[in-house]
Each structure stands twice: as structure tokens, then as C-alpha cells.
Length: 291
Image 1 (tube, rainbow, N blue to C red):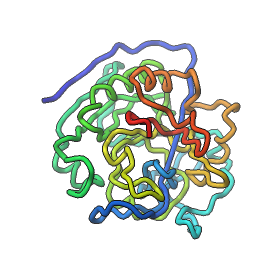
Image 2: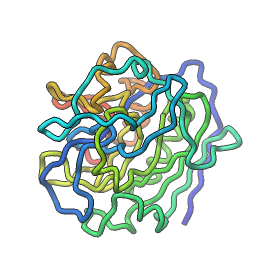
Image 3: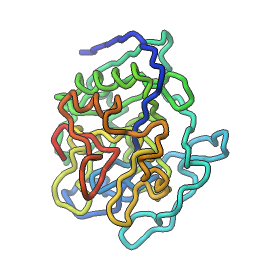
């Protein structure tokens, strides 16, 4: 059954900023046919999601997301490099994959996953969640371009209504997201480019370096603006080009901050935030399971 929600657009004097992620290296874990984890467009943390495999059109700065593969390190991540000048104050436009909302109001739908969406996703029969226990969401969001867009996401059915409520609060606060789309199967094997910034949830893969499944593989975790909110542990920064965003005192749009509207929205729903962890610090990551 389809569920629709509408929330009047609220005028907010100041846009509050929040966060980003990307994809990690290959690691041993539960076997999933045709979904062996590999580095993504921007590598993701040990429990992050992949945003690799898509090449966006060039922005006004000339930067084309996903167009520059990085040399691989022995650990499977891409070579970590200083943030390119074009991405230090990241504000890239959103490419519309779905029709944008027309009336300036937040809209969301909750549906069983369409067969076409399931085929292009990372779901396989060996995943720790049945296809029937996932839901396909569409949700309005504000882009860095100041325009309203419609994104898509796969989540566990048990949290679907929570998630549409959370993103309704982000929309009301005009919290910017660059991209929101379902992670595709081929992205798991794509070469890392270190510049991905896709807000996404379900990705069927184990936790990096562990034998247990990631909360993403159950549709119970969401990574928000990975590039603006990188994962880091020691010398590892993911996405690999996002080191400029390690300085959390330099507030920029899309950053997840303590007390900000995005963190508050997830916490109000009972989700935990990886930005409070000590090592690793997974600033992009929210989880309904605590992991």
C-alpha cells in the first residue's frame, strides 16, 4: 500500500549544514552472489555505503563527479589525496532522476520495491533481508542548487515511516543534499574516485574487515552527504578526496553538526550517529541498530 505525506514548506532564515560518505575496500564476509564489495566512487568507511559508478555532467566549476579513478592502495581504497579546490566549498548541482516536486511542499511515498528497482539494486537472495521486507521510498529534498528535487531510497519496512518523517524535517529546515538514489549493483565493483556524495541507505554487503553484515545490508542505516561528512580513522579518510571536510569548525552547507537539524531529526527518531564515535569517526552514518 502506498503512503503519501505532505508537510508545508517552512521558511528558515539560516540553512543549517550537515554531512557526507563513500565506499570501502574488498573484505571477507558473508557471501552474496555478484555483490563482492569493492571501492566506490568515493570509498566508504568500514560500515559505509558505496556511491561509485556514476559519472555526473560537469558542474559550473568544471568538476565531473566519478570521472577520475584513483590509483588503488594495497588495502583496496583509493589513493587519498588533498581535496581539489573545486570541492573545498562543495556546492554541486543535482541531476534530476525523478520529477521534482511542483508545489513547494514535502512529499513522500512508501511502496513495495518495484521489480525494476530491485534488479538494479544490490539486493540478492543471500542478503540478510528479504526483498519483501524492503520498501522503496521517494522523498523531496533541497539541493545545493537551491532547488527542490525528488530522491529515491531503499530501507527496511520497519523504519520506512520513520525515514520519511526524518527527511520531512530535513526538507522543512532546507538542509541541502546533493544526491539521493538507490545504490546499483555495478557500483560495488567500480573503481574509486573519492568524490561521491550520494545520500543512500540499503547496500547488501558485510561490514568492512568483518564477517558480520553491515546495518546497510538490512536497510537500517543511512549515509548522508558522505563527502561533506567523511569517515576517518588514522590516515584513512573516506571519500578519499574529502579531507578538507575533516575540519568541522569550518561550517559549510551539507555538513552534519551536533545540534543541527539533521542530527536532531535522526536522534528524535531514536537513531544513533557515527559522528559521536571515537575511532572510527563516521560522520555520515546514522543507524537504527546502533552500528
